[in-house]
Image (cartoon, rainbow, N blue to C red):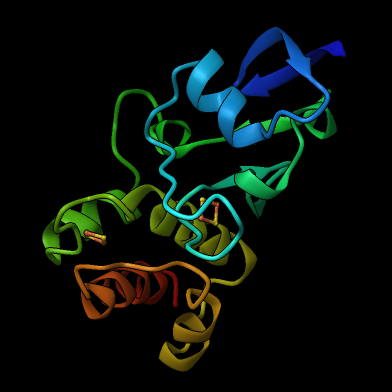
Length: 155
Ligand code: FES
Ligand code: FES
């Protein structure tokens, strides 16, 4: 059975017909072609499919598309403001926090969320909060350094 949903992705409204068992991950990648959202496990383990769902990080493979009806979704493209990378995106580049890049969108979105929650972050706290996302290039140090760099700009 199919159902019409209305979702806002990075400020743009979309009306989409979705199957009742279709995941938000599949709809974003396959219907809207937002391929910055990655996936490796499709069962909530890798965290690579993380997006912001009304501002809160969720693993989009664990959300049914119809649950996103009327919701505001943010992908990494939504972090760019007026054509400029965010401070966190710049920090990732400066710290060499991008290796193959497969995990980068998920870490940027989680980092963005953490910095919106609290400007003063401790390393252990960031390590713990990022533990649900896997980087197979073992780039965690540079990723955490980038988030802490932006955090220290606010303190
Ligand atoms: S694809 Fe969603 S957590 Fe791995
Ligand atoms: S940079 Fe390659 S998986 Fe993280």
